[in-house]
Length: 389
Image (tube, rainbow, N blue to C red; front, side, top):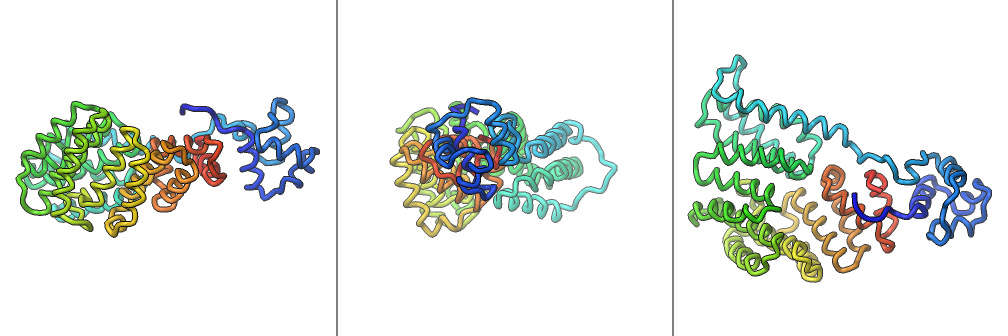
């Protein structure tokens, strides 16, 4: 994690309050004055003597390493790594599973479709630890179904790989997410499924300017028509726009998002065609994300504050809203407003705890906000709880 560590005085203040000690009672236990404690917590007085730091840690009933912010692991990191390893093992069985007979009963198409829907709902409710548990078995089941009937299982295979890629992006597992998205692209046998897979490919390859043409090519294969197709085409344009924003190409960003907005107006809000949640509000949130990418904090903040008042905001999946709030926090940081950055991060944590706790990119933003001298104590509390300070 980059950047300067949070001042030890702020750690002392947070841990003292958590122990429900007043400055006076804390000072009495240390054999110091209340003024001394106040100066330490405000950073006016430094803590240089090891013996004093040990005394403070003893009174606060924490390890010295926790007081200093060292050797603190993010919560649940071991369990997450084990879960990702199981997903990797399931994906690695791809070549062995396809084309080989199975000696186990294959799940019926109806049940398999239901399991895939459940996985997507779990993702959209930002229940990432639960999804980590579900995916290895689901991936194995779609492999078996594909072995028995490749045509009938094609959609389930693509959707299972899509939701796997979406989760792995959240968990910061870029290489494995690319593998899942690439498998989805390979399994797709028609333009619609290819476009579905390309949506996740765009998320995975957002840092690569080379991915833009791939998404636009997939979008061109979708003929304008029903809301389902419009949603896919529009979502691909959004992903291509965000890739262009990462490359700093304002003109292309504007053109692509304007085109997406025209399609969104025809679809309307409150829908989730092909798990895209595409609509006018989604496009507006994409404009916020694009503005953040190009460093235009004021525009991002203005659009954010307007968009969250729209009816469509409440209709978006929990995951989508929480992810946007992290983008909004970055926007507030760009405008030197750590208080509002902290506010929206805490709102995201209440809305979808796993979006903050299990997503490395989100934890980085929490740490960045908490290190700001103007940040409120509540964000310091969250950051320390996450093990990022």
